[in-house]
Image: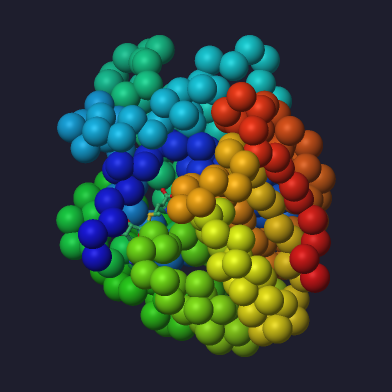
Length: 282
Ligand SMILES: C[S@@+](CC[C@H](N)C(=O)[O-])C[C@H]1O[C@@H](n2cnc3c(N)ncnc32)[C@H](O)[C@@H]1O
């Protein structure tokens, strides 16, 4: 397990994923009953963009850095940027800190949770797990587990709140990751059929994605909404873009994300290459 998210933190794919995450949590919060957020591949919580590792790739320059100073961003983006500013202000103790840290999905979700909401986060890599645990030490609304996120799905579903969002964000280091998702989802949905599931994926080879969609269509009975954003045309062996499959999309999520994708693509695409789309797969 060589993957370290620090090398990629704040890149365009993180921006898309985290904006969509906020839209999903906002949609859940339309109802007042508490929800449970489950992060199967949580990472360390936040990332130091000025660290040696992040400086090697500087992927954040093509992501968060491109939009952090946007003039009059739409409300959803303002909310997202607020999360980014919040962690920088807290850690640097400055009121208007510049971009030094980038929040990961658990921190972003936590900042949106209400007093009755709960989070369960799994992380398998020992150092990342320890960092995540330290970040949430003493937080009674958050449970951190050192375990395989796919096994976590089986262990923690259904949540006692019976309302929830599950983010599945594996590193896709192994070619069998898609297969593992397609095999695990039906089991998870059997335990918690009404949950909303967000599955992030990279857009590289078209053939891999076509196989992935086919197996989702074959194994999942619930509605599936797809969001995709690419910043390059179809370059071989390259991260051209990313997507999020949303199973059981919450009410109004499709509208809010469709409104925001053109703004994101304008801000993140490279010389207006690539494209975006959002549609109901089934
Ligand atoms: C893409 S990163 C997660 C980023 C995080 N969700 C975010 O948006 O900020 C994937 C994480 O999964 C961890 N990981 C890899 N295999 C795992 C597994 N089987 N179960 C749980 N975590 C795993 C990696 O160590 C890495 O921290």
